[in-house]
Image 1 (spheres, rainbow, N blue to C red):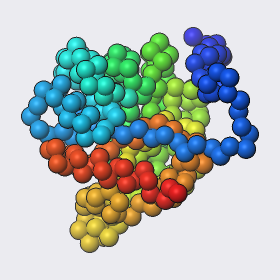
Image 2 (image 1 turned 135 degrees about the horizontal axis):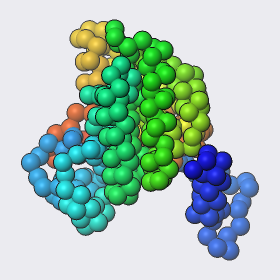
Image 3 (image 1 turned 60 degrees about the horizontal axis):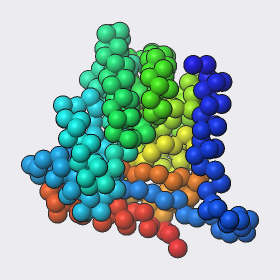
Image 4 (image 1 turned 90 degrees about the vertical axis):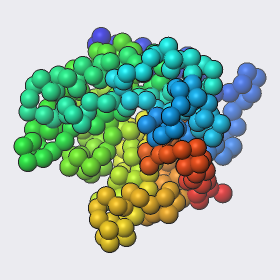
Length: 305
């Protein structure tokens, strides 16, 4: 499908689906203040450590106040069991996380490994469609001693373009995440990377906590703007990093690290973000998951009047 045709069809479908956002017979009030963006609460399936069935895990998360959960894909779970749990509990599956992007990164010099990641993404896109989600989280590549920055940039873009036909067939978005991969480590570059691919189904899955090692979340939000498709949230403590080691910074509880959540919420409001935020922190049993749910509520309320 040509990009122009795809964009036209997408725009028409979106307009028909969204309309004006008003109830019939209700006129828009130009002076009314903008509503605060609705953020729905999710987490990663692997964070549930209790040995329960898929159905009981979904029930547990729904009981604890989560709106959704994200699975890895490809996975070994029975799709019928997943859909039955979703439909029975009402817990949504907003997206999936590609399970191959670290083992077979898109920037790898071996074409077979890159192909494996592309194939896994095609499976993930179809799984996401089946689950009723909208995004597949993808690490765009890595830079290391054997992979130069330029090689990673060129290879990753080329491989992502190979996924676009399946993305278009399914209508599922490819959401690139900022991770500690020595790649795309400035917001201007991250925006440019997506803009050069130039497709409405490619954007960013912005991880707020991952940025704190070398930048400020608000700056990224301001630059990425509408390119942000979903959010991962975690905390990071620069004090723990300095005193205990680099990775220890992630052991800070939500609201107890160095993320300025009021500023983050304000920045998200300015760009009109409305959608999902998924916790990506250390999971555990029911009590631990309840704590995460409650802390997420505090995050969403921070600085909100």
